[in-house]
Image 1 (spheres, one colour):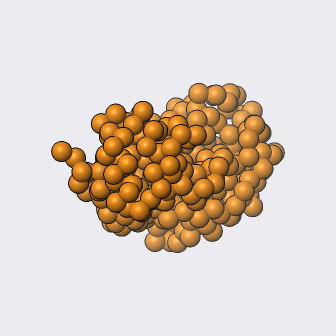
Image 2: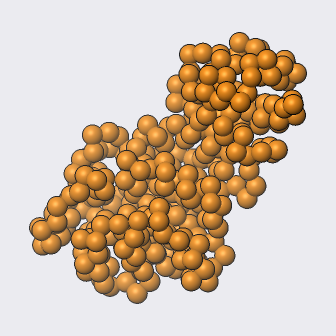
Length: 288
């Protein structure tokens, strides 16, 4: 029986054994609660047919459990000092591949191709400082990923899952909704980690859409308009958009809103994704 390390005593023993020092620049917080690990695996719906990409395995607490629940785990760790630790804690598993690389620089498609599979699942306890870039990179590249189940900062998870008119609703909510369906799995307290983070955490699952949730004539313009719509939240959409994206003139935005039967004093936070898509298509249509 392989010794599981997802508890405070085993984690401290490993840290002391290797004289490991936490690196703030890597946002390292190790999970020490096996119940949360079980919830992550259940939320990800792992099976023995799944190839899993794990980002930031740390000392391998989540990796161990996933290796027992899936066909194979590809663990990508940026901190080279953790590689010998992982080789130790995961030595009893023959279905784990460790890669010492920055996930934002790694050719993920090449890795997937090497595994000879059609698609993978991503499961991770992500470093909070770089959560959004990692997730958007995975989504925007349209990689063959069926789902992304990650532990992230509670506030970011709520923004990803937010609906129009709420305080958390913003450009990230719309971008996430465009590419995936969201589901909050569980909230996680700081004392489930070592060291304790200063904020609460949450596990969220993003199930990838095979086609985007709305149809637009130009995807890049859609995201420019969304970004502009939230650039100045207290201003009307017309003013916020005109101030941040000057290629869209006020009179064109006003005409587009009128033709779409939307209030010309509406704020960006009141529009849903479908309305942003309609506005995008209308503005493209009105371009001289």
